[in-house]
Length: 513
Ligand SMILES: Cc1ncc(C[n+]2csc(CCOP(=O)(O)OP(=O)(O)O)c2C)c(N)n1
Image 1 (cartoon, helix red, strand yellow):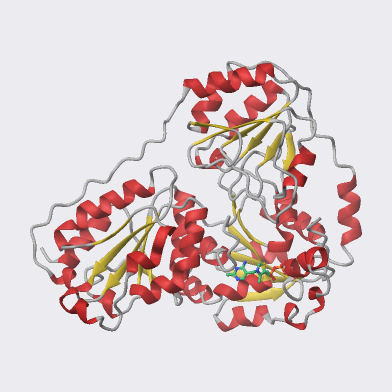
Image 2: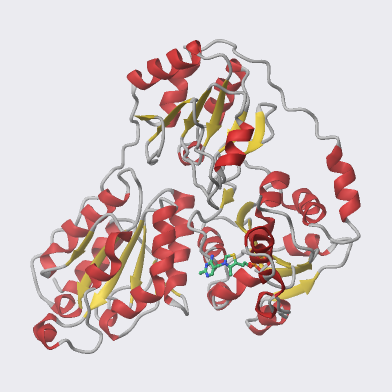
């Protein structure tokens, strides 16, 4: 069989289709027998789409990039996939090996270039490696810590004739129970006076929401969401939910001031910006999970779902926490209406889009998006890398499997991946966009006010973008919302992609200490 037929058969058998990519001459031969292809008009967008889809389906998806150039344009998306624990299989063409010693055009050290941003990388040495290397790549991507992998494909191998054996799709097994962890954490809880639970994204990954809620109700102690959770850490409708931790040591310490034990389950601590207080000093801290790498305290490796099932039978009531009713919320919403505050806007979004997957790249508004819209299973995605331009392709990738997807994006961030609108139109993807337009890079102004006063006034941090016109030029229907936000109903209707711009409050939010 020819290399290109083997490549097509292997990725079909391994359930990796469609191929997301942006091809060049070094990839054309490998694509000869493939039709299920999604074109993005900027290389990184194909990684962003595959990232969103891989996370949403919890299965690997494949990207085919154009040698070192496509790889270069995709590096921050690959880094995001790594930070998001997303099993993306990245492939790229390499120059013809028969003249590689001459450093021809479109050749380069692809493995060196991708560095440690993937967990496994390999350049094919001959076509007969196709099945085994792709199978291994998938296995590696789905072994905790889950993450992207890379295979470089020298173009001449795709024309090679060889005897092909199809791959056998590997089965990922995450039923990693750990009785020692259950006993140890149960003992710590028993010995503590006032424990707190912090849940993280693995609750969503392993669908352990019910188990998490049962354990927290039985214990009666407050539950917090991990800092900058990139997926839903808990059901926020629960009376046990006490809010999200914010990513500064001092802020975390203050929230957990009265707790002598903090149990992190399926989550981690991401910090930004630097604050001088040491993290949770003097407290007993323990982490449980499969994909996390805790920086302090004790750590037990376990699947959070089986861990919580085990823990439930070993704990008794410790506290009597129940979330107090937030009486100020209604007043806050009403007060914000005139100036189009984001809390007001999100309260309206919540009414219309409660059954939608939310992809959050709202940046300075993200804390409000989380607080007002809340979390529910497989309904919240965010990039843990801090990369702008991730949300729009990730939402588009998810919308290949889910009709109800709303990307909430800052107007600055939206510019980083504008070309995704072309892909959305071409493949009739149903993703909806809500653009929060606040006249510039608001979060940078907010940061400046706290840490570099004066910079917030710089001319380059403010701009006016006709975002609705950009959408129209790609053939995507768009509107600018009025004060009543009636247009949200229009945005929600129908399966075609639409974009709604909301001109929100331009005052600089106080986001940093
Ligand atoms: C690829 C990339 N480039 C630059 C940045 C730096 N950066 C972080 S937030 C931000 C501004 C975001 O603006 P916008 O999306 O309009 O949201 P806002 O802060 O106004 O809410 C920038 C430029 C980044 N995180 N990623």
